[in-house]
Length: 179
Image 1: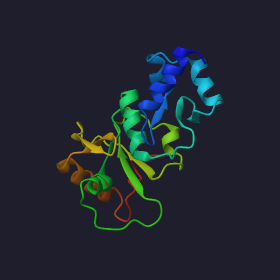
Image 2: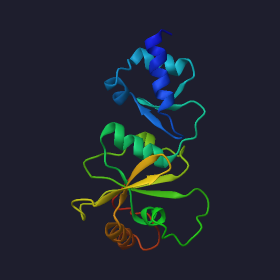
Image 3: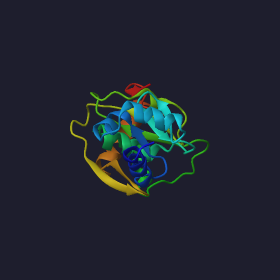
Image 4: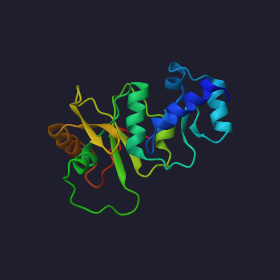
């Protein structure tokens, strides 16, 4: 590995935090070639989650950093919504059983990538999109080392009620969920 390539891997490692994902499109814009990314995977520095999505080998896949990285690197606006936003704001009143769910809102025009739907993350991500709220009111919430988009307090209560209206017996908005 030459000095320039060594500096690039050092930059990735210095900018690392647990659960961080790397998107090849973003890395390419920052000077990382396909060959170099393949070399990082072959040498064991990075592992592929799916085509174009990588993480540090041996790292645990965490849903909050995954959302933050996707938004930041790919220019998306997926956000923590409904009861998950209440939880982040300290309004939870229950102890979840099993693997916790993470409610994620997204604009209808932004499709949910397959890698987000797999069950490899620390939380089961459940997605919904609605045109009921034309302009999402989001705030940035610092959680650990990531900045998450989270429904604003007045909007998150409305999204909880919206989900309850769709399906009174569970937290799944089955009519508008992306599967």
